[in-house]
Length: 549
Image 1 (spheres, helix red, strand yellow):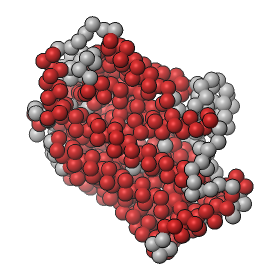
Image 2: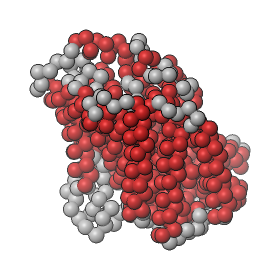
Image 3: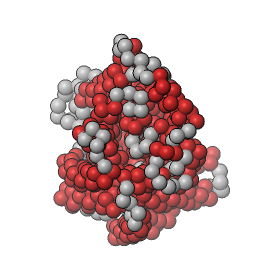
Image 4: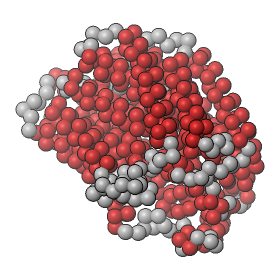
């Protein structure tokens, strides 16, 4: 949900916030430091295990911090704080939804995935099913999710640049998108998963530290009295010159999603996709293979939940603080509208220097996110499609690494081109599609594979392809693509599906297709393999052998 809000940056007229020289200087410093770290981390990066999963060499706390860095994008920071500043309680529901996703979904599958797989999500799904068709389906789903997520992040960079670096023309923004793509390619080619992980760790520490510092600063201004902050926020909202804003009660639910029944169902649908889709995001799942044991995987989840939960609590203070200290009118008149709340709050608190730090960190997070997506997509293509489907298991690890590196370059070029083409358009549907596909095509198959012995290949294929197809079709014919002023194609109207996100339809459909496909197939699997998977997933026996050290 928070990623969707970043798309508003692309629809607003650019306006400089702070000092562009300071913003870009801090950003360049971040790139230099992280590139040095990546080069040092790449000294031992020859094998497929080292390149794809860092040889399982990270500890639980390290991996948990990296997961937080991978999960908390710039839009998580800008979007949630802005939503709370303008809509109050309804904005904080986004934070609750993401935290619930970790508490429910990843605690349900993280350890079992780590015990069963090696490099990619397809390792788990193909453990006891027919390998080639299942790997192909899983790889296609992974590539679709990763590509749309990459596209959204790359295009979002153009809008952030307009706000922070005073680059107004489309050509200048296109150049910056290309620079982000080239840096992404460099990070992953040089450092592999090990270098990417360290970039995510550094970014997470900076982002969380920045949010913590601003939170303490805001609380200090109000004598640590959160109630007073919220009261001032409501007063600022009530005194807005915008009648629609002034009528909102930001201390109670309904300011954003209290309208029509369709609006409420749409919120439920999108929330369902985000909560369940998190546990099906390939770049998040792949992170659990970077630790050596199931115990460390559990520690990763605990660290990630703690850091992510704390971060979203910070956004509650920052959001209401921005409403109280900056005001809704100033926020909504800035480039990016509500997404400018956190940068404007930083400017209000600490002037151009603090704004430069916060803005540069927020912009730099894009690099960490796209690097994680790139390594995941390239690993899936090399390991699942090239090695297992094309070469039928006869490809060496060196071959897989070489193909993965080439895939990264191709994927980076495609992302740059598509990001430039999408710059200036409403890209919200791209991120919605990524989460909806992950929830529809990936999660049902993962859950059934881990918990249902009867589940078979037909059920997996029906669930993955059915979830993927239904999700994409419903998105194409939804208001996210056409029919409204905020649609991807605002001048056309071929929408017949009323919801912007199909999660409430496509997710249950994918679960049902998995059941129907399984029960209509005579295939009951091999009892020995089923028993082996159950024992390994629950106990971890044999899991350590799956990772080459």
